Image (cartoon, one colour):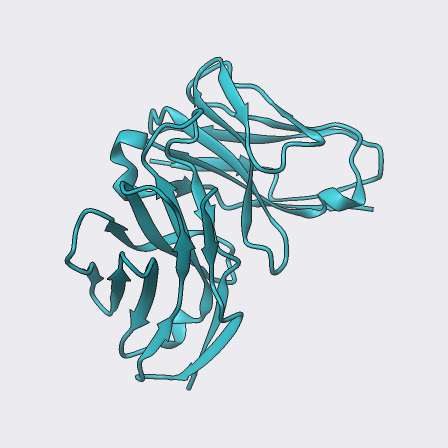
Length: 119
Length: 114
């Protein structure tokens, strides 16, 4: 079974600085997606960034970028120029694209990292 | 475009009561999911559906039931509520073939069983 591990329960960063959130996963599959979701105090789950496993190039979305190391099964999120609005829980998630018993497309989440951006 | 709509947003139940959490999506997504989020535990899959008339168990299905009579609706039924079911519940939907977009989530239902 696939698992996702986020080893940092809480982190803090000063406004305008850079922070990196860690995520590792365990799978025997070769075809999958990885995601980072943001959950602010409003509770809404917001997709931040995604990475297809077959792509070697790291995904980037404005101030958010990932460091995807497929062999190491590592998928970290870097937030540059941190803003107060980045304060939230961040969840790493894995999606298997192989249809084993109907599990295709199910998202498996890590426990999350609570990020606080300080002024 | 409303996306995924969950009702109610908050609910307090007494032990042994039953209720249905409603979820509807207007994006014609074929896949729908129910997750629960406990403090410090991330999200865990309760049930999912790959299309109307087809449902299957996820990681934590005990104490819950689902049905999928239409593409749009995927209600979650709690029978004989227990304190262990106190949690935040999220409904989500997706096109698996467009998995790179991830899921579209509802805004969640905070349920307290007392």
